[in-house]
Image (cartoon, rainbow, N blue to C red; front, side, top):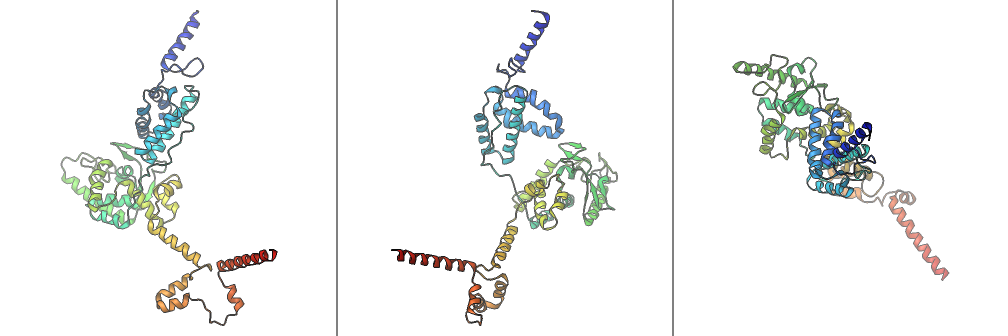
Amino acid sequence: MTKYEAREKSELEIKKLTGQIAEDGVVKNGSVTFDWFVHNRYLPLKEADWKEETAKVKKYLIQADLVDAFKDVRLENIDKLALQTHLNQMAKTRSRDRVLQATAYMRAIFREAVEQDFLPKDPARTVKPPSELKETDKTTLTWDQLRAALSRLPLRDWIVLKLDMSNALRPGELFGLRWSCLDPEHCLIEIKETAYKGKIRPWGKTKGSLTKIPIAKPLVEELQAWRKQCREEQQRKKHWQGPTADAPEGFIFPGRNGGFIDSSNYRKRVLHKLAKELELPKLTFQVIRRTIATLAKDKGHVEDIQGMMRHSRLATTTEVYMQSLEDGVRTTVNSIYDELSDTGTWGPRPSEASRSKHTGREQSATTMAPARETSVPQEQDQSAKPVRGVVLEFATRMRQSRGREMLLND
């Protein structure tokens, strides 16, 4: 063969061996495994659109939930049954969100395999998450439980959680705050960066995370008093390494050496310990955010709560964070019942029921009894009957008339 033909043939053989392409445009030689495709074809295309920390989380989930299960299986040998069985098994031990995420990644990976001509048909196209999934954590606390938690804390932790509860801050936003972020004159705090796993990032979880947020005026005074105490303590320490409270770049809640506090460490040392002491069902920053979003339903409009939570979508606030409370549900049910009882159906009107509570049993019986001895004409009295009684009387008359007709016909 010519030099050109030899080069073309050589490239084709190399591509077959590396699992890139086959004669019909589809890999059939079995050299491509699920693990190879994910790490060499899927992730390089997707991670360019992910932020650094987001990429770490996504890669971990894909590896733990999918790659470890189908690691050395040839790509063309994975069918719909194998994928659906894997999701069914995951649903027994994993949370609802984890299974839904795995389903989404599974579909995206195999859709990309078909698009790149590694597979002729997508086996994950019609795969569905199981109907019975473990519910995600929806723990919420009460105002009394939140106040009880605050009452047990020393000054620093008291201000940390007071600020977090008042504005539903994420832990990365809370521990990334510096004194330059505080505007005491206008009672504002500007979130400029976030702290996450030992790093300061100039971005937040969403586009609306980095913004100015209002804080209560008494909280501003408490923060200024906290700054004064930090300044005095830092002056007494001879080996203070980080910026002090006098410097704008100093952290509002510094660690031992002047750096920022690690949120996971704080959660274990303070929140988990506090939950155990107070016998709370759970106490984390996520529980606090969910609790504030739920309890704030009686404090402001839902769009104002969305702004406080800094969610880009209103549905995230209402469907994910806001939980229905038993007292609120009971109030709603009672209100609906009162409205229905006021339409002429069986039972007293709400005003009559309320009067009967204060006048005793005798007047209650008088109020509930039908007014037979009044001077109201008989025709007017019949017209005041509930609709249900009129319908039953009409149906009875119809049956009687039909019976008479049958006797006459016989």
